[in-house]
Image (cartoon, helix red, strand yellow):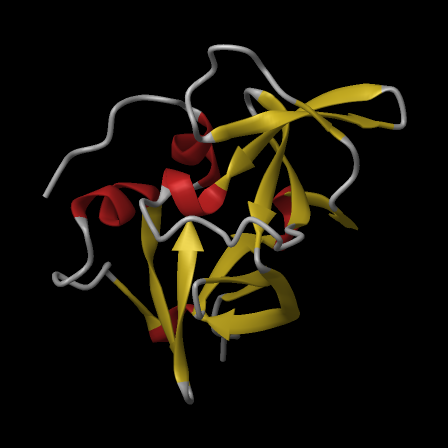
Length: 149
């Protein structure tokens, strides 16, 4: 008997929603370090951070997914991920646990989700008491205009 396909995700929260990035793509999770603004950059780019000598772009995930902006006084957490474009930091509200899920719980993105969000998530895993939104990291870091509702 074959084991069901299992995937591990580093999870985090944005506006009460649970999101996940495949664990193998996550380099580290850190508190928000000093950030250097990028003049004239789109709003989704919050700035550049220096990660032990490596310059990493910080993407405001709330803005990228067209959610309510983070409170001015909120200190985001950074989920540093590796993708083809290089290393980027995703600014999130808070960090969850590492979650292991079965492929059987995976479904397409719900129809009632915004087009922008549907364009950036692979789908959802139905967990016992909530949905885990699986981010498409490669799409997330390619900065193109998202479809509008």
